[in-house]
Image (cartoon, rainbow, N blue to C red; front, side, top):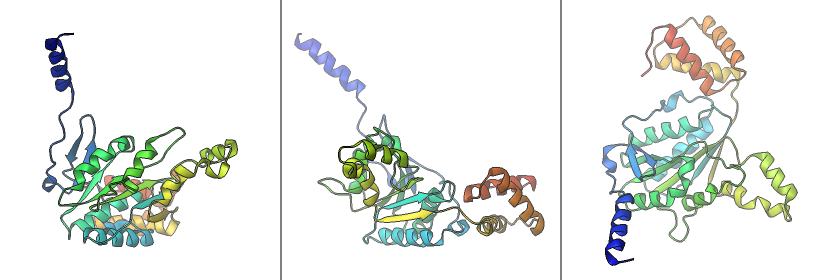
Length: 280
């Protein structure tokens, strides 16, 4: 193969390869979403979140995460946090609401969302965050791992950071329905079939141990469910009849087969629509 042909192949490969990500302008937004192929940080014009005061029944988790985030924003030591537990109880809403509350007083605090399927690219993302004059809450929603899923190895780059260590200006918050980030039947199956059952799942289960904060979310009571709805009504200045509101809310949660913050918001959305109210 002559030199001319080799040069043409090299030029073609250069054209096919994506250009390296330019230094992001973090001043344009308070939140970003990380995408790959090609790598880029997309600014979020308006974050989809609710006010922190509207999150009812999770006071301890709220206060703990708020304090941790505020210390981080001030440049002090802070822990990575795993928010785990029941679906619809406000795990991701709490992360976004806490960021909004703290960011109001610390505009250099940025929220960066990372999708679970993009975990293998996290090293490249951290390289862009490491040298920036901002502080970042790196957020991964609905984090979990299934059998033969190797993405969990990439997570260690965030939690431990390898030789370089986790960037001082990055803290990692994740939500999951599973306390150990993997299904219980998978844990039991691997333990029962392993030569060394005690070590079979240690590597994956130990991931959750690398989070300094474990914040549990549990099903809400009926009183908490109704309090959530009344809080939404007050925030949007909606004044339905209290007795009718209670009866309709209880009927709504019965048809859904459970109570949660998400079900409370869905009921309020229906209620607001029936009263001709726009939610913005």
